[in-house]
Amino acid sequence: MGAFYELSQAEREIMEVIWDRGEAVTAGELLTVFAQRAWKAQTMSTFLSRLADKGMLRGERQGRCTRYQPALSREEYRRRRARHVVDDLYGGSLSAFLSALSGGQGLDRDEVEALRVWFEEVSGDG
Image (tube, rainbow, N blue to C red):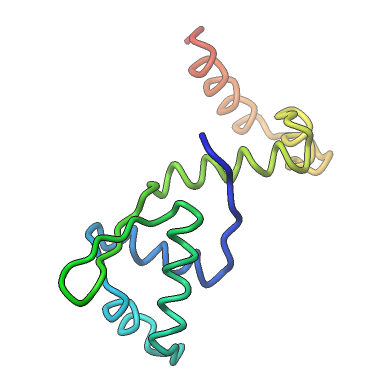
């Protein structure tokens, strides 16, 4: 699965735009999207380089610019991030995570039923 690297808020926002686009983008196109931030070209270039270093993007040189596309889907990133939280904060214990998530207040019937169905699906018993 590879190492998991946390993304900054700005990096996540950039990735959301790239995922939503569904096609390779250039730094210039992203600068237009984020015009309200008034980022300079070097700032965007730094973000894109960091995202590539973290395994989130692949860059392909085309002429004078590089076109970037996701190396990881949004779903795969979310799955890895969730697993990282469970591993890092709860020692890999999904039950400890779910207990913390419920805040010790228990779950309502709909939540219990949704979890039951989900557990049956992932365990192959469903």
